[in-house]
Every structure is written in structure tokens, then in C-alpha cells.
Length: 410
Image (cartoon, rainbow, N blue to C red; front, side):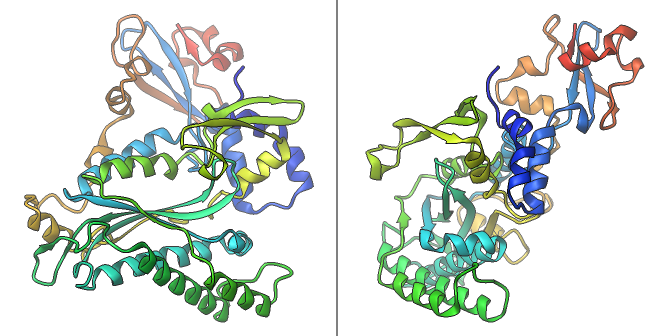
């Protein structure tokens, strides 16, 4: 049987939890991954309308770090933003925090990430609001990532930025420079803002220093970071923002590693694939295998569980999503007809049922009867810890534990 994140946690998490101190968010994520699509979460029955086929479908945990049930939320998020992204070129800009600040992030995940979002968005809006670079209000979509391919801490922010903006007269302005912003100017301003915000939050008591770090040591660290360049990447403009949004969608749900990258779980060790970084001879495609003790693997995965209800994807400026965004004005300035009676719900495709989403993704076999090809119908929901009621299936013997565990009854 292929190894999955669920099987790793089912076999080894209890022993790991006895040896390590974990947060409530970590326990919640581990519980969700272990019980996703199992009897513990309840479910429903999918049946052919003509009775040829019956399938017991257990509910997904819907935790954003679970790789097993993140596909549908990602598709829905991307469908909504396809209608929201303005029809203009977009730049992909990455803001990376120095690794020497990783300990501060581990002990202040929400406050640290809020600071990163604020520093990056304010840097972009202030610089691009200057007529020297653009002189307009831009749209920014930002997504937080905290890991690299090896599951180590790598806190960075991916942003999609419109290559142009709306000026005070309601006209669309194009950037002065082809690169949108000079990388060095962007880096210096972002670095200054981020450090100033960290100092202010520590002064206000909204962040705490890691154990063993004094206030003087923290100030010394920030001064040392002023002398080194921070990693800020500005990519050439893409013709539209959908391609970059598609890239971001892979990370907003499903956690830091998918089941397809897991190779084996044997003798207390996990082997998985990862892409070699450029600094180690990688070209972005070359892959290697990593072999870790299972405790190390679980520990690395758990450190990337976001705080509960923390928003890891945010919009700013024209993409801020409120009545002050001026998105409609920008769309009209770009020649897009806006239906003022459509309301604020731009994710119209969210009303589609699960069969529509599967068929749109080319997975019709998942939602149709293998005999007559009719769409399966969902019925008879049942509570957690229970099996489907007898009346949901054609024969009483079909609901015996052996058949329920198999998940399908033909």
C-alpha cells in the first residue's frame, strides 16, 4: 500500500506527541489528517439512480493542511479569482525573510506573518503610488508560504501585482519601468518597514522574544541584517495574473507536502522527493530523495500548521475586496463591462455541486456509474462514528463492516 501523510500520522503521531510539546493548532491538524475520510467523520452514500452502483463516501476533514481534501477548495478559490483578476499584465514578486529570524517566527506565527503582509503591501502601494514609478493604485494578491521543499522553515510571501494602476482621475496608468520597480529600491524599503514594524510590535508587547534571546541581542541581530541584502525577487510581467494565481493555488490548501511526493515509510524513517535548490546544483526540476527519521518529518510538517482562522491569502489595493477597492473603476478603465447588479459575490462557480467540479477537471469516472454512466446521487447522510442506515443500501448484508470498510457496493 502506498504511503500517505495520513498513514504516517496514524502510525506514529501518538508516540511523537508523548515526547514533544505541541500547540492546540498542531493537535487539531494532526487529528484532522488522521481521520480524514474515515468513519470517525461520518459521511453519505453515492448511488446510481438505477441502483447499479452504491458507494459509501466518508466526509473530508476540510483542514487546510490536509493533502487529501484540498483539491476542491483550491479549484473554487482559483475559479473565484479568475473572475476577479484584472485583464492586464501582472508581476510576480517574492519577499523573503532572513532565516536568522525563523525563531522569532516560530514563537509569534500570527504576529510575524501579519507584519510580513503589512510591510510588503505598504511597500508596494507607497512606491507604486509615486509618479516616479507609476502614480496609481495597484491590485496586490499576497499568499504566505513558510516552507521549502525539504519542509524546513522558509518564510516568504508571494505577491501578484498589477502592471499598472488607477490614478486619481480614474484613468489606467502603465508603469514607467518595464521591471515595475527596481529590485534594490524595493528591497531597502521593505527591509526598513519590516524591521520598524517588528520593533514596534515588541515595544507594544504584541510579540515575544524566543527563549534565550534578550532585547539587546534582538537589536544587534536587526543591525546585522541591515548590512546584508534581503532576498526580494521581481519577475518579468506575465500577460495576465491567472498563471501566477494557478501557481499560488497549489499552496493555499493541502499543506507543505502532497502524498505524491511520499515514497516510503519503513523502519521508522520517511523517504520523500524534493526539488534540488539552485544553490545545490538544481535547475528547478531536478529531484532528489530525502530520508528523515519519522519524528523529524512529523516535527517539520507540524511547524507549518497555520494558527486557527489565520488568513494566509490576502488582497490589497484594487484586490482588497471591500467597497473602497475601486475595482469596478479599474475594470471599466481597462474596457471591462461591469454588471453593477451582480452583487459582491464574484465566486459564482462556488454554487456548482461536486459532480460539476469533477467533470470540469476531467474526472467524470469519479462521479458517474461505471455501468450506465449516469451521475451518482448523494443521499442518506450519517453521523460521525456510525455507518450508513440500512435503508440507504439495497441489501441488509451490504452494510456489514467488511463492505463498509471497502467503500463500494456493486
